[in-house]
Image (cartoon, rainbow, N blue to C red; front, side, top):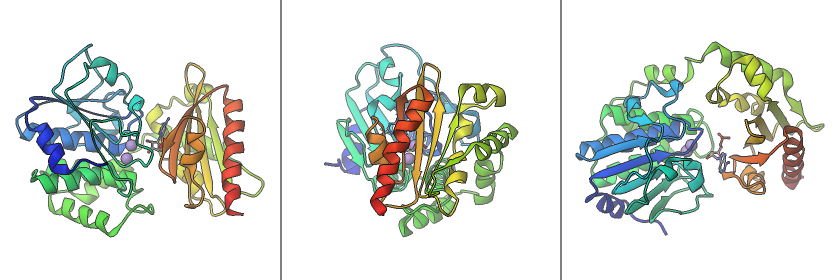
Length: 325
Ligand code: AMP
Ligand code: MN
Ligand code: MN
């Protein structure tokens, strides 16, 4: 059962210190929702801490209020309330959880269908294309002011999670919210340029490498690409450079599902997968390996070595794609 927005606002009312956090390997929705929520709490006079396991990534520095976000600091810190945003499973908060004493009020706001409802108060809407859109609806309902800085963060959250208002989870409401955010001060041209037109050159080298190394299944419906630690070293790429590479593989007409395997330090493999057909549920495939996400975009962390993880995942994906025969 979802808590109502007013119940969540009421639970936050007495809190003086609030921690806001999101998932590791953060994306635009993770940061945008975190910062927007933190700015709103600050406007209520609360002492707000915003943490992310990976700290503030350089590529999201354009977000107003980016300076608020830090990697977890300290041990056993006490907060009156803790708000987790855009985080399907508790352990994707990383060491944020270890750094705090269990807070009195634990709120979980998210749009992942696989969300574990681990909060004391949960608001999960898997029809919402971005947690940023839920935060917008929340602020509207509880009378929070959408300042230009909050508007930029929510617009970035929604734009990045919908592939610039393209994915099937984009509804009429998403455009209405987008329009309201523009009225609240978003400069679409400037913000979009910061989001999509300021890539470091090494990312283009990574894309070149991905296009050269892409492997198609014989029927062309599955495409995959594996990035080794040696590749990472040679290309000098950062984890955040990987985001979106898979979209280029997915864009091929024959492709139904695309997968990106990334070798991690310590022998694990990060899997990132996308589907273009709602009958092919990549969340179901990722769940077989302990992961989750959305039906059309999901991930998992598997045991290595890379070649074994690739073979296992591709077999399971092949079976899933076989559903549409
Ligand atoms: P990504 O492929 O990393 O962009 O993630 C796609 C979606 O899957 C996101 O909504 C993530 O929250 C989710 N996801 C990615 N990795 C995992 C994981 N290891 N466990 C659960 N969900 C994941
Ligand atoms: Mn996210
Ligand atoms: Mn999201």
